[in-house]
Image 1 (cartoon, rainbow, N blue to C red):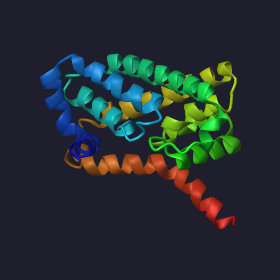
Image 2 (cartoon, rainbow, N blue to C red):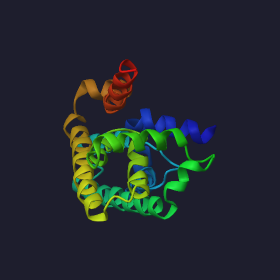
Image 3 (cartoon, helix red, strand yellow):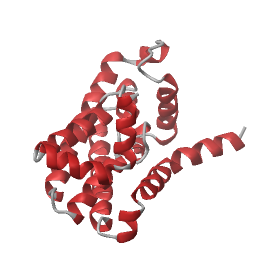
Image 4 (cartoon, rainbow, N blue to C red):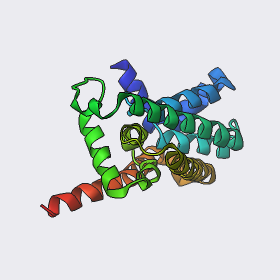
Length: 212
């Protein structure tokens, strides 16, 4: 429970926790960011880790306090997300379609099936769209590997998706981090970011429901 509570606080109160973590770990904080983003994008068992909100908060701290370098964040997080994507892709390729038939406690089969369905409808664009959708972001490279998407095609969509996701989230935080309203209502802003990132999935689910 303590671990869940910690990640919940980091998700919604990153603006308060990050400065304390930076003060404690100094430049090692970049390694912590790298590990979190790599695990969130590269391991199907850790889709609960903060992604969008962490990037937004890191950008906000970089813009308002200057204790983080925005360009270091851009480069490092891109490497983390890109290597995470590739790890996930090859894990999916090795395990193959048989993973859908296994009842594994540490992998949510319903998320796998939803992501697979999303792929069937949107193809390679799923990798770009998934960057802005929690949970789907974690499973998309894995399912791409399972479906044996050609690796060169996967690389193209992975690079484009990561560049868009990282730049939008970090620069949004960087530019809005000094805004008094954002500082005062950071939790609410984080909820809005999460809600907006879920809109494509909500739209797809609603559309599918009314088409029955």
